[in-house]
Amino acid sequence: MAQDTGTAVDVAQPGPPEPGTALDVVQPGLPEPGTALDVVQPGPPEPDLPGAGARGASGRRRWVAAVAVGAVLTTLGGMGAALVVKSPAQAAAEAAAPRADVLTATVEHRVLTSSVITRGQVVAGQTVEVIPQVSAGTGAARPVITKMRVRPGDTVQAGQVLMEVSGRPVFVLEGSLPVYRDLVPGATGDDIAQLQKALKALGRSSAPDPAGSFGAGTKAALTSFYTAMGYAPVSANGAGGDPVEEARSQVTLAQRALEDARSAQAQAPKSGSGSGTGSKSGSGAGEDAGPGAKPGSGARAEAEAGAARDGAKAVRRAQEDLAEARKKLTAAEAVAGPKLPAGEVVFLQSFPARVDSVAAKVGAEATGTAMTLSAGKLVVQARVPEYQKDLVRPGRAAEIYSEVTGLSAKGEVTLVSDKPSTPGAPSAQAPGGADAPAPGGVQGASGWLVEITPGAPLKAELTGQDVRVTVTAASTDGASLVVPITAISSGADGRTTVTVLAGSGERRRVEIRTGTAGDGFVAVTPVADGSLASGDRVITGVAREKASP
Image (cartoon, rainbow, N blue to C red; front, side, top):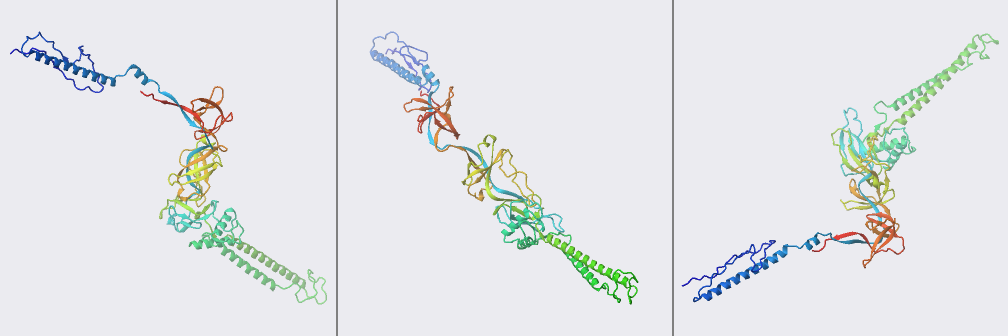
């Protein structure tokens, strides 16, 4: 049997194209590099043997199949190339600048306000540091805290004892004048009037003393107050003896001297009481002596007259001494009695007050600040930088908001300092009248101090909290046309305008006059009536959108 010498075809089947892979497209019949087909040319025709025709037909069929496979692969390669290959025109379009469009805003008709927003701190109208200045007392080496009557957060009323130092009380009374001296009997002044008023508020009148005079009535009221607290008042005389008793002894001695003088005067012979009669005062012995006159009767009369004069003089002097002794007794009694030591009292503006902190401990030496109290109406203190200080003025409306509690309140600016300051320690008043130099304030950078007084009392829980303060710096008189500040432009001709965009896309410039500005908006008035109205759209800027591929 003759062998078949037909065409041998090796077909390399390619795998599926990878994404993004560029394919070499080979046109059918045109061999290109990268073709997967090896075509073997047929040899000389075979002899016409039986079955040779069938074998030739089979070879042709295999060749046609290979060509078909190549066409399919070519089609798939073209489709893959179309996904990753970009034309120069398409690449240029994607690299071009985005298409421009405009941003617009609606003209509004409303009241425009300009606000200053800052941080503030809620503080009491009066913050006092209690610095005990009570003496150690007799036999004590140093002043020691012997009892603490209050704790942080406690409410304090007038007349309440805060603590004891070496057994002596430190208490609070109502008053705005700091204590700066011991208040003793016989003293006068506004601080005495303040004490009398505070005692009267506690039900202890100082009558009949006039206001500002520490007399017997004030002594009685102060003694009663100390007794009610359970303490003995401090004597104004101290430990140097009792001047009243000494003055009384002097009065007694003067009274006795007067009695003796009067008794001696009563026992002295009267002038002319001798046995002779008719003698003349001042006559010498034997001078003009009548019949029966005894020698020396004139001398006796003179002696008797001198004794009478001496007796009268002794009585007069004894009376003067008694008057002087009584005067000294009155003076001693005036300054004797209880006193109010400066170290035992703290005056607060109003009650109830609040204990903010307590630093002292029982058994510790009484040095430095023992506790801090706050009293008076709660206010908010803030500091603003220089560029805002002219926008915040007394009388401006303000809003207070606490993010911690969610509480808010209305108020107004009541104080703007005339010079910058740095935050310092709260103002302090020691029982002895020592005040701290720095005002109460807000922690943070230095600036102009602003105080906001709320319209209604703030809750005590806000004391010391950091709050947000919004102050209305300016406001339009009623509703005005308002546009964003970005909508306003000034041309080379000096005119200030806005550009109105109509629904049809038409643009027109409208000349305006500007007014109050605030919160990114400006109140405007069109120069030509009716050229601008609420609801108009004004151009505020240009927006760029990326072009579609």
